[in-house]
Length: 260
Ligand code: ADP
Ligand code: MG
Image (cartoon, rainbow, N blue to C red; front, side):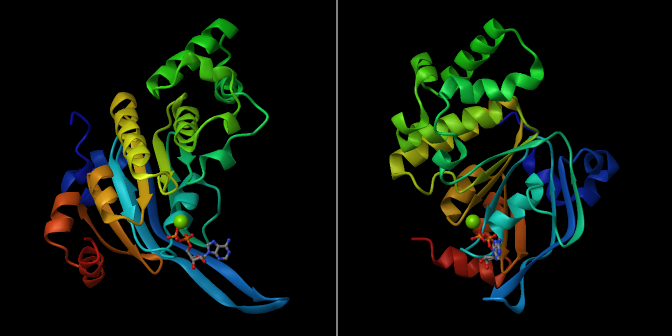
């Protein structure tokens, strides 16, 4: 890979202030509480995130793996600025885009794919011809024919919709692409092709990718570095190969034992 070495952010101390200063995401002691209710009654507080520190370097590929309820989606939403953390500090530079498990839900049903993509170009104040060219290029990049521009989301398959969601997220390249289990609703071969597309977009655009999954094999494929989450905190983080071959945390060992 000709991308910046993803493992470098794991030990910012060793690399000095230059690398520290260039992180695209820097979270420190992030907490996120949800107030629980039982009808009208307050029924305590759920600590969805409980002291998370995370740095992502430009162009880095980070996988976040953990079981359902461990706080992965909440963490991505905090990075994206969709929910304010209860505590801690958050710095994100250069903008984020997010793709979700259900691509259909993020694509307005009555707009055409061309309109959905052009929408993202509006701030660039391009001519209509330039917009159309960018839309064609974006569709080529995701492996769909230019004729898809006139289709509406429901006319596409689930895999095609997820590709369109990725085109929309990257037609103006973000510094960080946030992926929340984007292939969990797809069958195995479609999932593999979408994972490859994300890897290819990252290589082409030089953006960082934070990829959330409950599947350690997928985490290993998608991340130079893996972050293991459990119960709202980070159990362990390290270069993907080291983490899988020499897990340190007991929780990671349990997770590895569950992989067939
Ligand atoms: P994951 O994505 O790893 O499955 P989530 O981040 O979705 O985990 O959820 C972490 C915990 O926070 C879970 O216990 C979940 O039920 C709870 N949670 C998430 N969002 C909300 C919310 N809006 N209100 C209350 N609880 C929430
Ligand atoms: Mg989730």
